[in-house]
Image 1 (cartoon, helix red, strand yellow):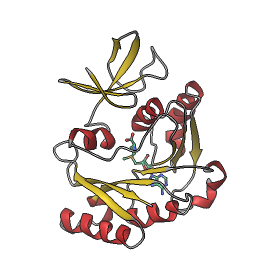
Image 2 (cartoon, rainbow, N blue to C red; image 1 turned 90 degrees about the vertical axis):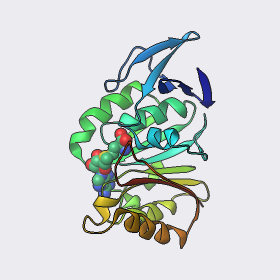
Image 3 (cartoon, rainbow, N blue to C red; image 1 turned 90 degrees about the horizontal axis):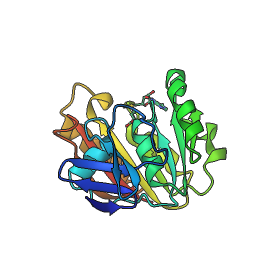
Image 4 (tube, rainbow, N blue to C red; image 1 turned 60 degrees about the vertical axis):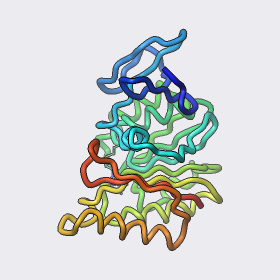
Length: 214
Ligand SMILES: C[S@@+](CC[C@H](N)C(=O)[O-])C[C@H]1O[C@@H](n2cnc3c(N)ncnc32)[C@H](O)[C@@H]1O
C-alpha cells in the first residue's frame, strides 16, 4: 500500500481514500483498516476521477486544504472521496436534481466539509455566495454544453484548476466521440490553459477527463 497523493492510497488491487467518516459506507465500497485508520475502496467504474487516476493522471490538484466546487454531485459517490481527500478544506456539492439531495443531505450531515446545494450549474450566480476562495472546479454533468458551463463557473475563482469529465454522447450523440471531445477542448482553450487530457476507456466509454488551469 502506498499513499500516492494526500489521503489517496493505491495497492495492486486498486485505489482507496482515507475515510473521514470511519465505519460508514457511502455506496457499496469496501472498508479496510490500514495503519490504524480506515480506507474506502475507490472504484474507477463508479468514479471518473478514479478512472483518470488509473489511466495515469499526472495533475492532481486536490490537497488537504483545497476548496472545491463540485458540479454534478449526484448521490455523492465521487464527492465523498473528494471530501476524504480535502479533509481540512471544503467542497460545495451542486446538483440540479431534487432526488439527489435525498442522499447528498444526509451524507453532508456526516461530513463537515461538504455543503449540498440544489442548483443549476449553468447559473453559477445561484450558488456564488458559497464559493469564496474556491481553487478547484470539478464538473461531471450530463449536458450538451459542458465546456461552456465549466467556463462560466471558472469566473467564480481568481486562479486554480478546472477539471472536466466530458461525456461525448451528452454533447452530440450523432458525432464521433473523439471529434466531440476535441470540440469541447477547443472551447476550453479559448479561455484557460489545458494541461492534461485523458480518455477514460475501459472504465467509461466515450468519456475524457480534461484538466485546465486558470
Ligand atoms: C453522471 S452524474 C454525476 C456522478 C458524480 N459526479 C459521481 O461521480 O459520483 C451527472 C449528474 O449531473 C447532474 N446534472 C445534470 N445537469 C445539471 C446541471 N445543469 N446542473 C447541475 N447538475 C446537473 C445530474 O442530476 C446528475 O446527478
